[in-house]
Length: 150
Ligand code: FES
Image (tube, rainbow, N blue to C red; front, side, top):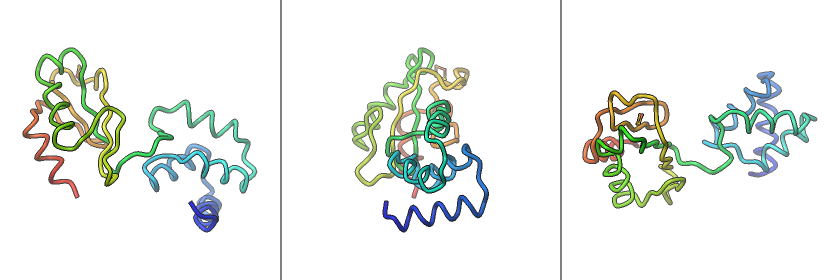
């Protein structure tokens, strides 16, 4: 990120008078993750105590400091989903998209997270793309969904 980017973001934060939490949400919305170096520069510019904002950053699971793709795919491999074919979906993601847990595609379109339970076992196997849930999935249906995303 250039100095110009930092200045623009700082200007926007001041203009909108964002809280610490909103600053993190704003950055994550813009980059799909929170770049730590950028956040340090913003803290310096705005004279925000780093410990406060980094405390919030690490507290909320919604924030990631790892670069992520435009679409965050979560596939459940908990017991209910695993038994009903979750692992076939995971295998398809590896074969078709070269995705593994924690990995982002080269084009920065997808990031995969394999999770233990998405709290929707009744519609196992379950996947998510960003905040949307897809229940009763199978590898072919999910492949189609992903291929249709721009
Ligand atoms: S085990 Fe998959 S949603 Fe609970």
